[in-house]
Length: 408
Ligand SMILES: [Zn+2]
Image 1: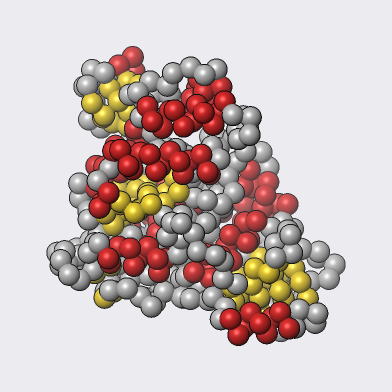
Image 2: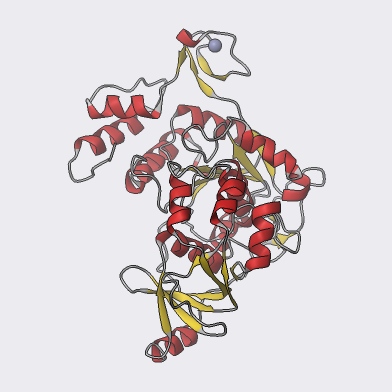
């Protein structure tokens, strides 16, 4: 199932690229987990549908279930029990010592009647579609306040991730899962698919770039600086739930496609989908994004300023600092490209960053997300130094069309 030959790779021991043999980074735990149900299992669940209890799970848990199924959460085989949960919350690692920064848990729904231990529960989405099954190993109570403080570094319910956490309730079910297959997407979505795509191209070193926004020139610059050092780039937009004021997924995909077509060499980039949901947990989530991308086959991961955060809850470099605190590349298994704020500078006449440009703010073309939305809403031009004209055009059309509302 795993493409190519997988060997452990640290930045120190990275083998030189071998043309015919992709030597990709190993997943966490050494083996890519596959929890997808076979046709026989699916048929059996269908036949037993009447006797199995059902649990409708929220969209974040549904995204986690899909990621468990594809091995994106290797070495996990199900939703975390109390010991692993507490270990992740307080020490950012599973009980076996595997680094892991976000607790992957399943809220029990109606706490008056949680499923019994040993029961097999059919997990369904809001429209009752079967997503998978869970064998209940444990039912336990979470300390949500402690989880918020450790994982989100705040228990302020104005933080969207913290608000979502408190809304889940404390009763939690844990146990191994099997996951119903979903139709194949147009773009690689599972670690097996991206690894196959990398192997096909003969890549050994791949940098992952997580994004939930259109790629403007600042991020194009970061990915290209990284590309100077490695074999390939995985542009990995998140396709799960984001905040209402983020640009809709379909619009973003159009932007990525046109940008890659016009401004990147086709044989150096794979556009994939990351079917995860945002929690906005800042540093913890940025490291989670890197760990998951290691499972997708990325030896490197871009950690920019203000990664995975929201509002003013996190310092600009907290995620880069946490990467080092958790043991860096040696322990986490992937190397980080830590970047400064970047922009087009009229003084330098090129893309630059606060590390490389000596000029002042008046020479630098920097627009906040709010300012970009303002310009789009009024149908005004976005400077070409800020975003490629083809990308600006797609955004303008999306903001103008009533059929694709963009909340503000
Ligand atoms: Zn400059």
